[in-house]
Length: 371
Image (cartoon, rainbow, N blue to C red; front, side, top):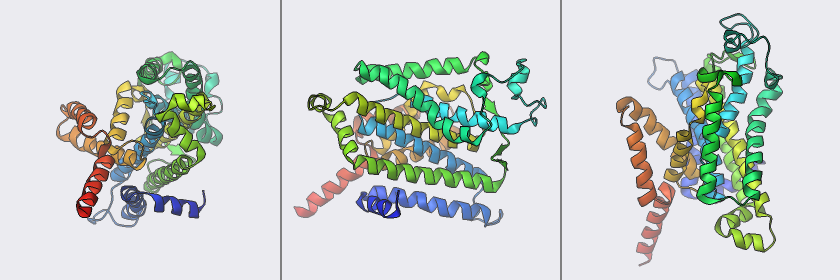
């Protein structure tokens, strides 16, 4: 996407959207300087832990954008995007595991968990996982294939509404139970961990951590601009038409199933990409990422920020996860209750999220000035 197109998109953004762009750009400048150039004893130094934490927030923001596209603009409340995120993470985790080579606990070319389980060779679905092509493509391909099969079956049968939401959650739960099994070949309960390198560079090095953080930030901005350009196109208008008047859109001759499938697969690919960026920064991927509660939590991020805005999804992801980081330390037993209360408050009092609240306040101020 050209620079002029991005500039035009930013100009068209509401104030809160421009603030979101400015915030991420500021992070991409300040954090690397604070970590790499300012010494550790200085009050302005940004610790490597903070870099990793902010990088994780950025991958969550990318995941929230995927949900906002699917739920906010298409109108499909997916409770299974955690599965797409986890599949992308496992695809990256497989590459990072192969990068370890014979430096594992058992000194074998096989991953440690396979040696422990007395496996003699790699399963067929691990073949090629040590290549850069795998690292780049599989975090996108694996979620896309699942979304394509699932979406084709559901959309052609015209499953929608709460029934579709329940099915997406059931698929996520089924995958969670499957990946916990050792014979699946994905590390069982422990998952994949103990990563050492990526593309030959140590994951423990500060500059690599910063590079992953910057890559995550660029991914958020690029995806944001890409989705905004799509939503301003003819396809974007059709997506909103399907959300607001599906039967009318169908009656005028558009293939609603195809529109839904395209957007659903695209959303799944973005979620998988987010998972691929998440894993090397946190250093682990296990079946708990498939937990249905994770998908519900993502919905809360978007609902709090304001769906069908894109920038609201980013704001919600940062706000909820920052609160989680703080409150799970200060009030570890109360966090789930706080999250539940937040969901209730947003559902009842903030149906358009923080973005909608700010918009309504501005409108009230404008009406007051006119009066």
